[in-house]
Each structure stands twice: as structure tokens, then as C-alpha cells.
Length: 82
Image (cartoon, rainbow, N blue to C red; front, side, top):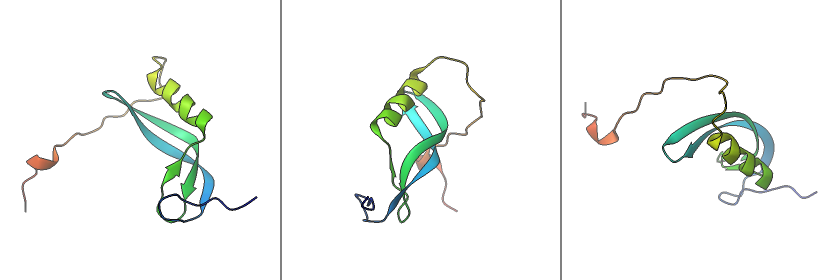
């Protein structure tokens, strides 16, 4: 089997489990242990078709979540220079 290469930088991609910040509309869902192909050089992530479809279904689902966290939101333009 030939080695898979990154489309962007040409680095080697390997199968790993990753954490994905998935946005659907105004909702943010963090998905853990997602199987992905990850470039060892630039970190670009690639997902198989079935994995991408499952991520979308999970993000849209209104079922009970594993856990919740608080996230701070700051506007870049409002930060004063030091």
C-alpha cells in the first residue's frame, strides 16, 4: 500500500484519534476520539466519508451530552495593545 501524502504540504499522513471542534450553525460541539488521517508535518486532518457523516449527525443530535464546559469568547478587535 503506498504511503498517503498531505494535499497541502506533501507530508506523510497517519491514522490517529483526534479531538474536533465541530460547528453547526451557531452551535459548537467538541467531538473526542474521532478517527482521522493527520499530517505529521503540518497537522492537517482528513476524514473518511463515513466519519464525516457521523460527525455531522452527532453535532446535530439533541441527545444527552457526555459533559459540558464553559468557553470564553473574546473579540479580537477589542483587545488593547500593550
